[in-house]
Image (cartoon, rainbow, N blue to C red; front, side, top):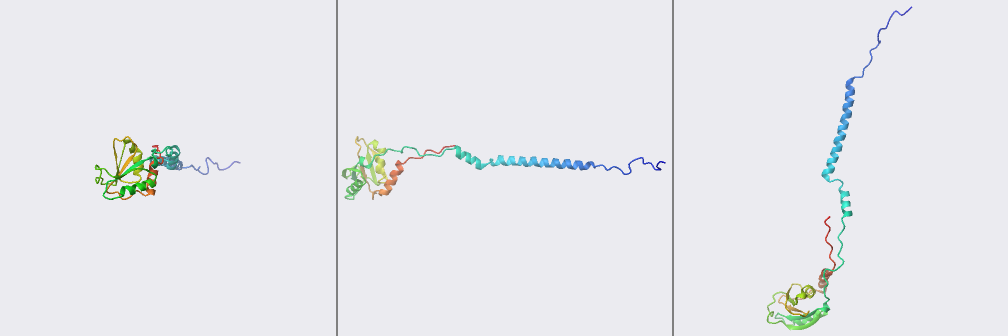
Length: 200
């Protein structure tokens, strides 16, 4: 007894996975990889053109670059008013001007020498506030200190060997600087100056 019917092949045809589906998967993976590389490259370009992390760079610069510090010594060693002997001469037509000026400078601590009228060389020939006349050594000492008391003075030197200074009052002299103004000017001259800023 055998079967009447004989099956010579598969009853149903075998299902095959389409090849185009595999190609789509591979194409998708390739696209993802390409997009990742493009994104990474864009980030590198942005970092190059923006200079990287600016906040970190600024912090590193601040840490490595020292700040300027004031120098330890004063700019100038200036004499005290009491160490400066001042001769006061009036080169104007106003009477009693030299005496009044001498009294005011004496109150401010200066040592007063001669007081009177200016010589013919300067009498009525000083158009400004005044002239400071002394030895060359007075330029960086006595002249500087006296200059804080009267703005607009002209400095001149002669051949004298003594340390005294002549103050010749001119036509534009009205009054000395106020004590507050003179003190501020003196402080600006004697306070320590900051060191140059580092160039790092």
